[in-house]
Image (cartoon, rainbow, N blue to C red; front, side):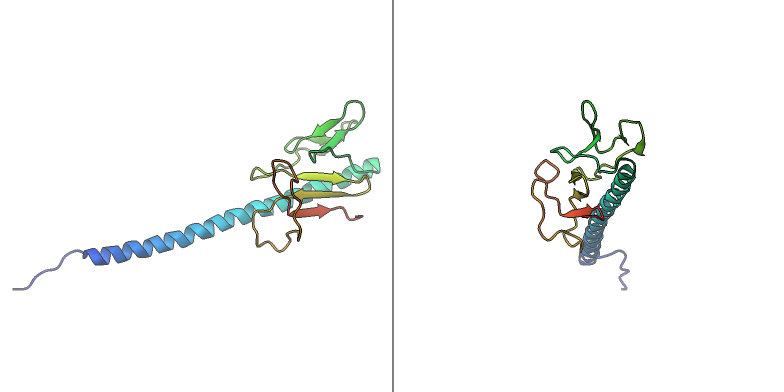
Length: 158
């Protein structure tokens, strides 16, 4: 009598499930790392965009705009000071627009702007701890809400 074996044994099914679980775990880890790196690339690009806007401002006013204690740009210093929030328009008191929309952080952190009038530093928090451009000494409390800033872009004259 010949037995006809149809289907899989329990052991074979468990082996296939284990292999699929391992592949899913590896894929998810790579996906998470890619998302973190994408946000950091966006942050770096945002700071470059802000830097270009600040350079356009200094060409018109011969000084960089002031900053407040929260690291925001003072857009309209005459009269009652007006601050440009991240994600809003960057213009001066004459109505000249330097950025239709200042970028805002894609991950809930804040950008931070500090100026001496003749130069500036822009700071942000990068999530990828392996990024080769991280500051050696992060700046605690930078950008509010207890976050540390570990990446900066400076004006060329600093």
